[in-house]
Amino acid sequence: MARNKAFEPEERLEKAKCLFWQKGYNATSMQDLVETMGLNRGSIYDTYGDKHSLFLQCLRSYTEGMFEDYRKVAEETKSPIKAIEKIIKKAAIRTIEEERTCLGVKSTFELGSVDEEVHAILKENTTNLTALLKDLLKKAQKAEEISGKRDPAMLANFVVSNFTGFWQAYLVYGDGGLVEQQAEFLIKSIKK
Image (tube, rainbow, N blue to C red; front, side, top):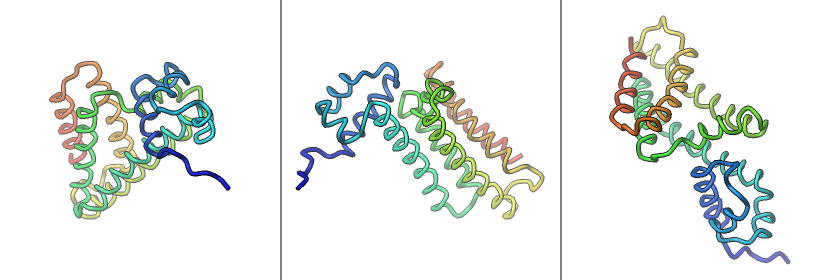
């Protein structure tokens, strides 16, 4: 008979995610994980696998959680253009409130070009977010909230690309007002 774990796996995964988010994958050692998660190496390996497997679980948890937040905004807002505005503002606010580079963005530059599994998670997340925005943009065109002459796929890619710009601007300047201005400019550029 298997015995029950003496810890909550999701709670410990969250601790590991915060550590990877703070230090990055390469700078995080197994000893760092042992200390932060409050687990011995055996428990980590038995529950999550090796460091790489644990990181992939953390990255997937992060990207899925972020996408779910955006999906809920889209679902709860009747006007498609208002939903897009809320998603853009949510991305800007998240940038300012988290006060650190997005785990997805950080992972993109650290591992995205050298780790196929990380790349696949990041690509899936970007594809999902772009598709969500593209669908909202098409609906906004049908509702005549934006010009029908604009290419929804290109606009969706443009919005998602600007989210990375929010993180970069905040990391370099530490100016939340600048990020909010970028978000407002992005919203205006969609409505043209």
